[in-house]
Length: 288
Image 1 (tube, helix red, strand yellow):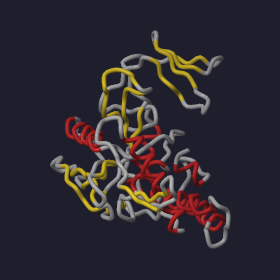
Image 2: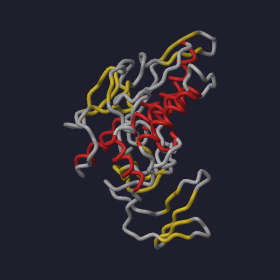
Image 3: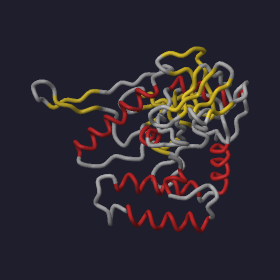
Image 4: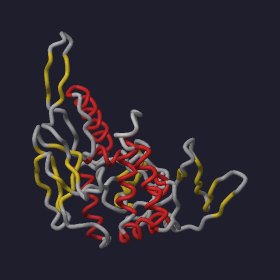
C-alpha cells in the first residue's frame, strides 16, 4: 500500500480530488468521532499521506520512485500464464502476499530496489534470507507531517515483573551491527507497547514506529537501521551523490544507555550520542 492507496486515489488524481478524499477520510476516522481501536492509527496514516502528497516536490519524487523498475544487467520477459518474470536463468515470482521475489538477480548500489527504494548495501551473498538493503526514497514523517521524529518519549528502560511478581526495571539492549536493525526495531516497538499499557497512555510517532508503519509499493517490512547500517547508507549517499538526502542528523535504532542513542550526521558522517527525546531525520530501510 502506498500513499495514494491510503487516500483511495491514484497517481493521476488532481489536488482537489486529493483534498476531498482527505477531508472525507479524516472525518470518518478522527478519534473524536470514531471509537474503533484502530481509528487513531488509520487517522495518523491518513494525515501522513495527505501531508506528504500535498507538497509538490515530495509528490514528484514519490511518483518517480513508484514509476521506476529495478535495474538489472539483463532484460525481462513476462509469462502471463504463470504470472512470473524471467531473465536468462533468473526468476521472479509472487509470494503469498503477491509481492515479487527474486532469485539470483544482481542489484547495484545506487539502483532502484524491488520496493522502489534505493539499494545502498550488498553483503555479497544471501544469508538469513537477505543479501541487499534498500532505503526509502524520502524521509519518513511522523503523524502530523513533522519532518523529524523523536527516538523515544521516555528513558530507555524496560519495566517488568520478575518470577516473584516484584516490579523491576532494566535497560533494554539493542545492537550496532549490520543485520541488527530489524530486530532492534521490533524490540523497541514491543517495549513501547508494554510501556503504553503500563502507564495507560498511547505512545506513537517515534522513529522506530513510523519506520515499521511505512509502506511503499505493497512492501511493509521496513525498519529503523542500526548504527552500522546507517553508516553504510551514509557512505553510499556520498559515493554515488544520491539526491534527496539532507545533511541533517539521522536516527539509528542503536542506543548507548538509558538516555542516549546513536545518530549520524549526513553532512560529515560523524556518529554521536543524543538524548532520545530530541528530533532527528528518519529513513526506513528493508532487507531482501
